[in-house]
Structure formats: C-alpha cells, structure tokens
Image (tube, rainbow, N blue to C red):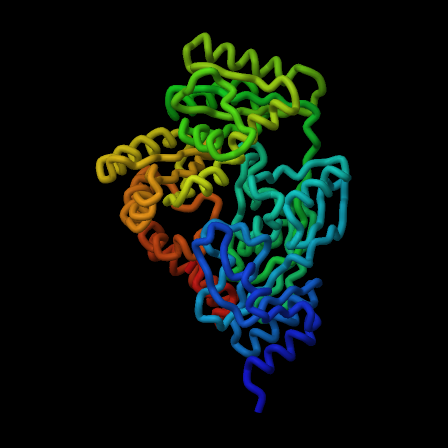
Length: 472
C-alpha cells in the first residue's frame, strides 16, 4: 500500500504538474523562513499552482488526506503568518504564479487581479488604466495583493482611502474543502445578506485561500505637495493633523510620524540618505496633500496651512519638496526606517493602534514605564499616526545588550500592550497576529470574542487544515 506522502505527491503532481511541486530542501528553503528571519519551519513540499482550478485540486487532495496547508504570497509578513511550523507535515501553497490581471473596468473604477500579483504591479495596472490603486507600503515591490488581503494591510494611504478591507468589492476564495466561492462582483451596493468577503480579509489564510479580488480604483492625483515638519512631541503632531484636516480637508493623504532616532538610523545605515534640516529635532511628521487639480494650488495650500501653524508656534520648522526628486527623498526617510532598523540590530517590535487623540498618551506612558524598567532602552516610534497606528519598537544600542534585551520580549510586550489596551487600542493594527501574537491576543480579547472566532473557524475549516497555529 502506498504511504500518505506518496499518495499526496501523486495527487499534487496531477494537480499542478511535477515541476511545480518542490521537495528538494534547497528549493524549499526560501519558503519556510520569514522575512525577518525570526521563524523557520519545515514543509512536505512547496506547491505552486497557476490557476484557481489547480488551487482547488491541491486543497481537495490535502483535505482528503488531512494535510495542513500554509498559504503564502510574497512572504514579507511581520508576524510569521505565512511560515510553516517545524513539524514538517504541511505543504506551503505559493500563489506567486497566479499573477494576472483578469479584468479592467475603468467606467466602474475596478480592477480584477489574481492574488499572487505584487502590489506594485497592481498599482501599475491601475495606472495603465488611467487610474490609481492607493494601497502603498514599503514592501510593495515584493508583497502580493493576496497577502495584503489576508492581513488587511494598512500602509500610508489609510488616512484618506482606508485599509485594504475598504478597497475591495469582491473576492474569489478556495474553501478548505476545495469548493470555490466565486464572489468577484464589482458592486458598491449589495445588500443580500452577510458580506462574506469580510470573513476572509484579515483572516491570514485560516479560513480559505483568496485567489482573486476586485479592487477599487480612484482618479490619479494631478498635484501633490509634500513636507517634512519638525515638532516638539507627538501631541504637537496630533494638533497639526487636526489643523491640516480643517484647513485642507480630504486632500490630506498621508501623515507619518517619526522620532529623531528614526532619522538617525536611516541616515546612518542607508546610503544616500540625508537629514534635510540643519539641526536635529525631537519629532517629525511627513505630510502629503494630493488633489485632482493641476498646478501649484496644492503646494500653496500646504504652505499656507503650515505657515499658520508656525505663526501659532505649533511646529519648529518645515521643508516643502520643490520637485519630484525632493519628494522622493523625503519619502525615503520614512520608507527606509524598517530596513535601517534591520541593519541596526535586533529589536522588539510592536504594531499597535489607539484612537488618534490618544497616540501621545500611548507613546508617553509606554516609554516612561519601559525607561523605568529598562533604563537604557531606545524607543523607535514611527507610523501612520493619522489613523492611530504606531510602530513602537524597542532596542538597546549595543548588539550584545540588544540580544539580551530581546530575551525579555514578553515583559516588554506586556508593558506596551497593557498601555495600549487601557487606552482602548489594539495590539495588532495592520500586520496581523500570525504566530507572534497568537497567544498574546488571549489577554486582550474577551472570551466571547475568541469563542465567536473559533466558531467561525470550525464552521469553515472543521478539520483545521488551513494555516494551523496561526491567529487562534
């Protein structure tokens, strides 16, 4: 009698072709480690389907044989959600070959794309249609739209356009038993019962495999104005945001907070980066306005709004980009923070959110408590303060100290997460739970919420084969 591995291999070969079933350890290696190098697992095989029908066939084979499935897109996640565990009994299902545009509807302002398409390619497909897909994040060149959907990614445009959840009209999903839900509808109004797509967005592949999506497009901005503003503290940032939204309305597209340490690390570790100010300041925000009008009106509006704030002594200094090259340089200071921190050494990372009004309290309280417990802690705080999302990362200056500090992650996490929870926040704003926060979430969600999540999981995936060990 054939053993289960031989049966599985035969069915996978039949489903996608033998050349798309990787079993050699060297070939599998890139798929079983996460981007941060924190999680490393093992897999029976990596399977690379090219169509929804092939995905369904793979899932049916795994369902019949009780083999776990770990869906994977660009493998750029921050929480280990796309990495198999070390039992070696699962397959990794890579969607990288499913990277086609299925439909473009400019009049409906929608684009239908497959889940393996890199986010930057989705953006380009929208641009080719004369429109814009506004989801934007540092990993957009390598992350996939399916991964963005599975984590409900945020990025720099949430303030104006919303999270990924807000940018999706329809989905195609392969369910854990191999059936395909064909929900690729480009409707902005459909009030016919439960909105099923929202079950799968943000579920991190634990309820099914998203294979395609209908996403919303928007008019391309014809003008932008970008400024880096120096401030005293995060409270000044919230005050400035309130004023800019009053003065400029929905033109405020991005509002990114950065501590001084962020600028220091980028300038130190990323070639070609420089501080645009002649002297250091404690805090900064990167502000961008965009508008459908052409010309210099947007820049004039930003200059006027910042000038009024300066007259009230609500900011220390500001530089406004005078060209596209200068705009790019300012954005690189923000976008290179994660990479500069990776070069700098290990750190304890937190992706948290609180109401925008409470961002200053969150940073102040967590920093004070950490400094009391760990006197030489370094706080690297940055993020999308316009939607209350702060990347609050903690480290030590010396590498040896930083590694010893990392061993105390649980205590650090408890301090930060307790502050966030007390302020009505969330311990995961845009990166998901994955493995990293799977156990932590039990302290911060009610038992009723967790029970409801488990009920949904059991209903859709009764055998628990979809991305086991993640989220719940």
